[in-house]
Image (cartoon, rainbow, N blue to C red; front, side, top):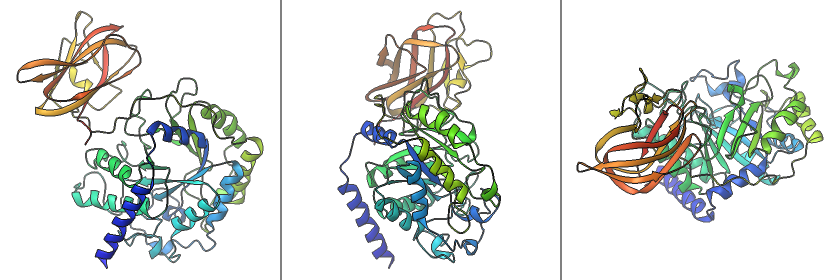
Amino acid sequence: MKKLLSFALLLGSLCVGLSAQPKSLHQLQQEFVDLRLGMFIHFGLPTFQEADWTDPDLSPEVFNPAKLDTRQWVETARSAGARFICVSVKHHAGFCMWDTATTDYSVMHSPLGRDILKELTDALQEAGMQVMFHFSILDTHHRIRHTLPFTAEKTAFIKAQLRELLTGYGPVNTIMFDGWDAPWGRISYEDVSFPEIYHYVKSLQPNCLVMDLNGSKYPQEALFYSDIRCYEQGAGERISASTNRLPAMACYPLQRTWFWKESFPTDQLKDVDAIVRDNIIPYNNAYCTYILNAAPNRDGLIDSNAVAAFRRIGEIWENTGHLVDVPQSPAPVTDINLATGRPCDSSWSEDCLLMDLANDDNFGTCWESSPAVKAPWWQVDLDKNTPVSMVVITTGGECKLKGFTVEVLQEGAWKAVFEQASGSGKVHLCRFPATTAESVRVRFTSFEGLLAIAEVGVYAPKP
């Protein structure tokens, strides 16, 4: 039986991967921005407790939404002009909202015993709407969390779940990862390899965008570990409608929290007139699609006050589709930063702001060059013959970096691989033909203000 299941999943993977005609990343980003509005659905075991972070060993027996109707969710979303639903298929406690062979911690082992995801995706397809998945890498039930060993088996478990999701439910426009590279989740991109998961998703569905919801630590001028720049408004993240130039997503709960609580039917909800005026309209004009969360109740239905709020959006706002042309942006950074925590050196620093602050994986700290140094440099040591093909330099403070040269050390000799004579912005992506290096050095030749470098990233060629 297991062999038959493995063969079926492999065949499904091949069919999905081969049937989809790959589009350019820029085209996919434009199509996502053109969606403009979606509904977020958080529904699961936390619905039956008063905490969004539920007990990771809570029995599936409590999950029994007797009146579940995913078509009601879809009609509610449509009434607002939403073009898709983003559903949380697995939240941080690991309870799966689909029929999975990877675990018995799922809806199929609850009193409901139905594949909610299949019902939802069928309803969306009937309505001509798209689907997005929200998937937590942090999984407290299956012990995929910080301080526990990260084994190949855990990565295989995650990939098996993604294979089911991306081969069994039709086209998925985006998968939004959560609980990854976040200070509260503490699972790094090395613990669970981001490039491995990123390329695996693309192998299953080439036209599926990949988002990481926890990218707030990265500068807003470039895409780091996400095809779409993400802003979780509930966590205080705000997009600049006047300066943003990246394809973006902003999400927010209509109710007090993401999952349903007993007070929700009578709670005062967020002002949707203000959301339309202050968020949806200006954000859409700034290349950003908005996702508003509605939490179904314990019967499996969206409360009447939330239904009315979504209907109100549709009364005062119309989703006319394409609005703005998304600027072409450099390809996202998706590989592991080889420079993080490695031995480094530099020319004379300003006071105690030493060279190791430029590769500490913290964009809030900076190496600052002493103003007395006229030709500053910064260097990081790698293992001998390390393959490299990109360096990313992010400035801090008021520094305006214009000119610099990137060099690699090979057999005791320095070789220039990238040179920029003039430039602007905080993030400088330097891509060059793949080579090897035992050290990488940046010589800074032109800048305004105090030279402050928040991070220097060094990356290997893509597989």
